[in-house]
Amino acid sequence: MKQTTAAPVTRRRFLAASCTATLTAPHVITAAKGSDSSVVGEGAHRFQVNHQWAQLPDRFQWQTTHNVAIDRNQNLYVIHEGDATRKEHPAIFVFDESGRYVRSFGKQFQGGGHGIEVREEEGEEYLYVCAYQHLKTFAKLSLTGEVVWQKHAPIKAGGYAQGEASNPQKVWGRDRFMPTNFAFLPDGDFLLADGYGSWRIHRYDRDGNWKYTFGGPGEKPGQFNLPHGIWFDERPGREPLVVIADRAHHTLQYVTLEGNHVETLSGFGLPANLDTHGELLLVPELYARVSLLDKDNQVVARLGDDVQRIRNDNKFAIRRDEKRWQAGRFIHPHDACFDKAGNIFVAEWVASGRITRLERLS
Image (cartoon, rainbow, N blue to C red; front, side, top):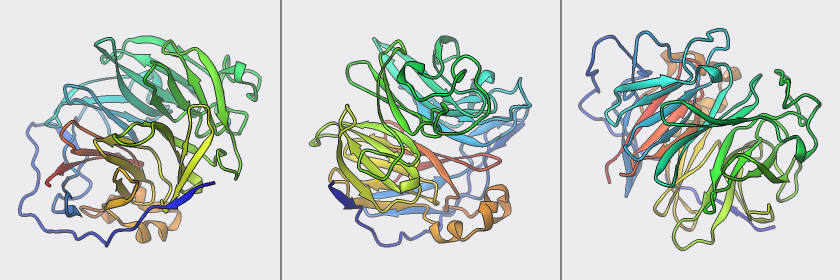
């Protein structure tokens, strides 16, 4: 097994800025959660923090934010886990490039909304969404929320409890289906990480038909302990491979499309998902930071780093206590994505939700 420790960087400096973001429309709830007075990163990777970017109309409520994705028009899609008792509340919200609310939908994902990605297919863009908890499903939607298809547990893969596809219940275990994130492949297929369920990776064709499975629980290379995030890494100059955020192992595992282990990167704190932009790999970590790696997978920046304070917090109570949140410091980054300009959007696993925009300065 080849194992590499991601190279550390010096602790980033937080620089005071002179202005605070303001709202541009009345009757809006922002993901405020702290003022915007920090610059994070260093060298060629510096970003202005804006915790107040997303403007949610007051008829809605911020809930636990899980994942983010962006379309070619630079609209941001945010999925909440959502409160299962609020069945008419949308789980998916769309914001334009200025942070203004555009639309919302997806009430069928309330109480279990998790992964979301945008994919272009023959000139048309679609959303891929997965949900866990009692929902245990994944679906392809239009950008306005119309369902193209929806699927449940791949019983053909074996290993799942009886009724897991036909009558899913809020039961956890390795024989359960709890999908977390997608990776899109060049031939139109996609991979789906069963991160909270069987700890396996499933491959599907573009119509959502199951093809094969690899991985599973264990300590050996190519085995996982909560494979939460997944991406197809085809950055320039690198061999195209699947990279998996093996969260509870605190590692990234590189594997082939068949699941054969190639390399493990260590030095992360509960890595949750991945994205790429040019030569950069983006890794949100639940232990209070977002990491950037170069084409050689060396760490070039740690953004919003507050690892020790969060790790030492009693039962992560801070995720429900906004008074203790600090500008420029993350609590629990659960997902992050780039826009076309290299700005970064971060969704945090906190009770009242937080979406942060990191504007690229360098």
